Length: 284
Image (tube, rainbow, N blue to C red; front, side, top):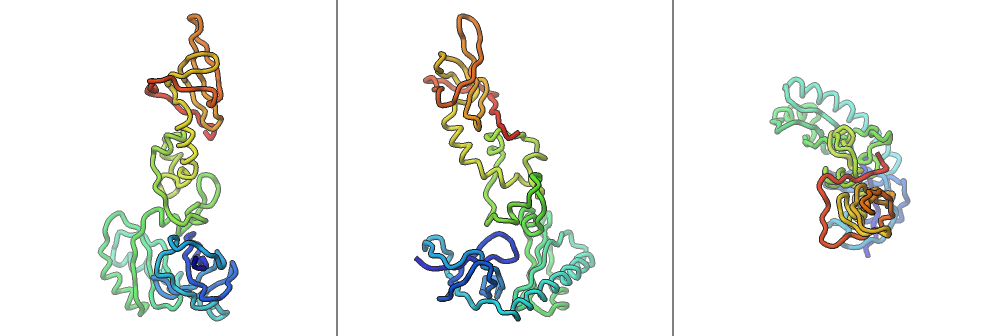
């Protein structure tokens, strides 16, 4: 298996693999590598490790060198340049009266290219803006339109849970999230409660979905006819996380509701859950 190191750039979460070229690199060290965007300086987040060939995106590029003091100084100077370029680009956008929101600016390590990231509701004709920026910075200019999730990832912030955004801290990529996940987890379908600061469904809905899917598969739904140690009945409520179900039993023309462990209850044959069954969730 090939040996690689994992490098992250600008604290954006995703880790990229590089060939250490026979060198032993420690976590936290800064290194100079070649990326699809050009020469970059990044931080090593995974020291020399052997991984499977299938986990590598080819071609695997080699480490150029461990960053020197001069390299780190240059990186710091680039960060200052980015702030200045951000202000200049904002003014140019206003001058051209373009409907776009500038999000971030990124200099490559060797200053061969400057990338401006922006959001917009639709397509934007920024050709004149690119020419204007190129005349100011005298280097290659690239404008890249991104989505609202990418904007949140770049800017960062605190979610409704009070913790930093997952996307800006550790997520390597965005996973598909659907309203079905919120329904299956018994969460409120109020958009304010299940949406992140980016306005999209919260990424964390994905974290527990596999567990909920397995619990739903093993647990009778509300409205299902079941057999219990106390006799036959109908499920009226389900507590997935607690592992219990409430069952309405018919005894001597008297209706009784009792709680059972999900493992004690079996679905009756040829039964279907009645519509409108709700799933109780202790997280609410």
